[in-house]
Length: 190
Image 1 (tube, helix red, strand yellow):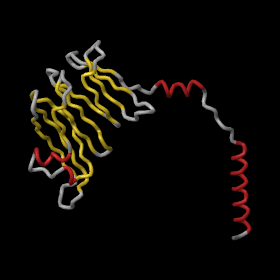
Image 2: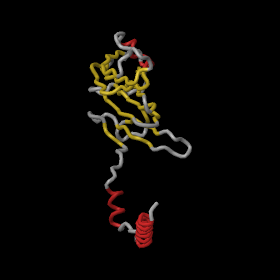
Image 3: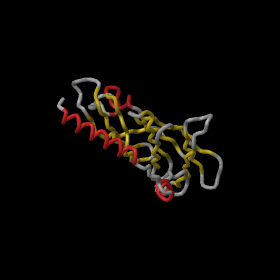
Image 4: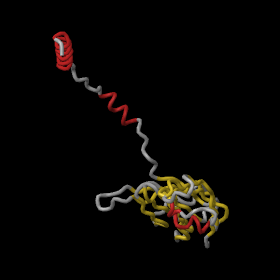
């Protein structure tokens, strides 16, 4: 290394050290801190069904119970019709006449299920899981052949029939398509 390069490197290091020592820490003004927290949307804890026959609310987890619950009741009543525990996320899809409700539950990070309940009894009628994909549509591969299986877009066709979209991604076998996007028709006793 030449003497000139040593001098240049030495000057650069000295400038960096001098600049580092004179830098002042900027404090965040109080109004900026509050602004961030005010922009966060709090999730809705209670929603009324479309016809107003039922209310669904989310109950927060506690130290004793890490799961959350959705609870379905009649407006103004405390008696629970349905209590459904979940850990991640759920969507509720009401039958048009409110004779049933479908709960789309993100059970794992890579899997959803659909659970159908009769109303007003709250009795479970049917549970759609990844294992049933090839039973409902023999032209599709089974859900166990994919790492990710998601059900979405539940549509009530009748009080005892729904249509649901299934997405299957990342096959475990080489001969399968990388992604499948299809609809399934599901009938269940009501």
